[in-house]
Image 1 (tube, rainbow, N blue to C red):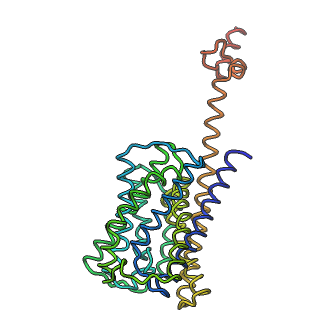
Image 2 (image 1 turned 90 degrees about the vertical axis):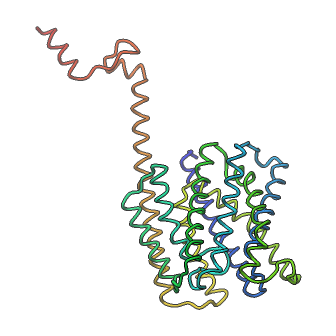
Image 3 (image 1 turned 90 degrees about the horizontal axis):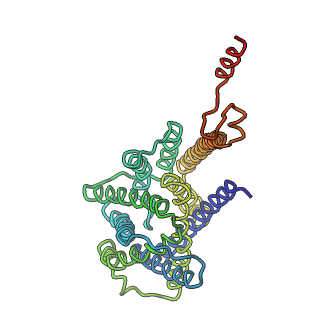
Length: 358
């Protein structure tokens, strides 16, 4: 199997793992929060990250992956930034209308819609990355479809808007840093997740109970933990290992924008599963929005594939030219008498032949 095919299979596997695990944990958390009334989202997220760190520590001790050191300031800053972005996402939930959000779990409708254009803007300005008109067009269709399918109420207030804006910025920067750090230090998603998730967990373990108290007026420590609640919490934490790992894996193998596109696919799947399994209210507007969003995702995938093929062909052409220029036999056939001599052009041969005829 060639390296390109192996990379494609790895990317497909990462995308599939991310979709399955994310949809599973949303359904699990929805049952936990809606049916069992455990509504402490930020504290639950801190437990997710702590369990993920512990599981990766065990995997490291069993030599499943190697520890590769990264600059301490980079790791701790990245970990704290991720923790802050999660806290802001959950905190802004309490200061805007309920219809402004996808659900009460972790992801916010309009915030998710704003993350893609914000990510494109930041990568264009600070990283010099370019996006074609076709890619922008497909992203526009995607965002339109998700907006139609999910956004039902746009009642905002100043504090809620500020918190949502900060959540968008921190989330975008954290996802761009995920991709940048992995490429800069040549580390895997597992190595980065292991070194950063402890700091994410500590940030949320400290702030989580206070944020949840502010949002719900309830104390997470005084909640009545029945056996059923404990089972769902444990299940949610176990699924979160796959969610956190696949997040870093997808961003490392693709890009922050592609990860956000995948996130909207998860939104559509969550809506569909919620209707089929939990009998959530569903309308023709939801169906139409999902269809438009799926069309945008298909176009995005098609245009990305086309552009990647063009880039691969251009890279192969450049490599072929470089190989030809350094091959002594090809250079000799082209008229180079010494290894360092440039090859002669056809015009040179014609001029030389003309001199001999004279």
